[in-house]
Image 1 (tube, helix red, strand yellow):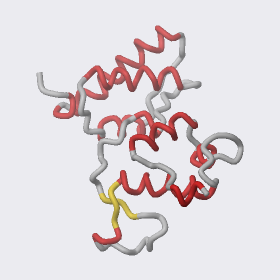
Image 2 (image 1 turned 60 degrees about the vertical axis):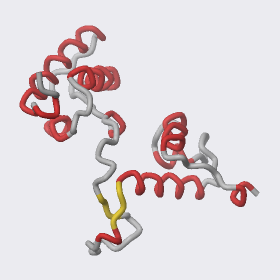
Image 3 (image 1 turned 120 degrees about the vertical axis):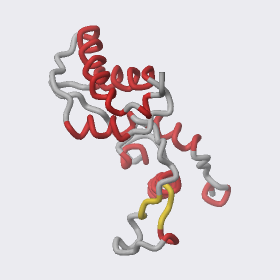
Length: 156
């Protein structure tokens, strides 16, 4: 059987099946998958197979509070790390390749910027995780993955 990334037409059917399955199992009343959520699921280049989709849907069902399936930004891993994107601090009209960063580079830049703004404090009311609107453990995980470490000169 071909991998899921080669069968995007199956994603909607599988999504509805898994939503129904996990909503019953968890005791949630999820009756609708919003169009933008379905578009994100179909556009994702599933490196795994159906089990990966199942895990994403199970987590989304657990985290959804209302009748709509909610798929957080962090729900789909970054598989498009080589797509160039414009950095917010640069001119929005600039389209030259020199002004573009990969998603991973932009994420690294954004995290480091938030950490510098908070004097490298991760947790708490004045922490970078709060500014970035993510859980502190998620921030620590992203820092580890992106090899973000406080330099000796920033420590003093």
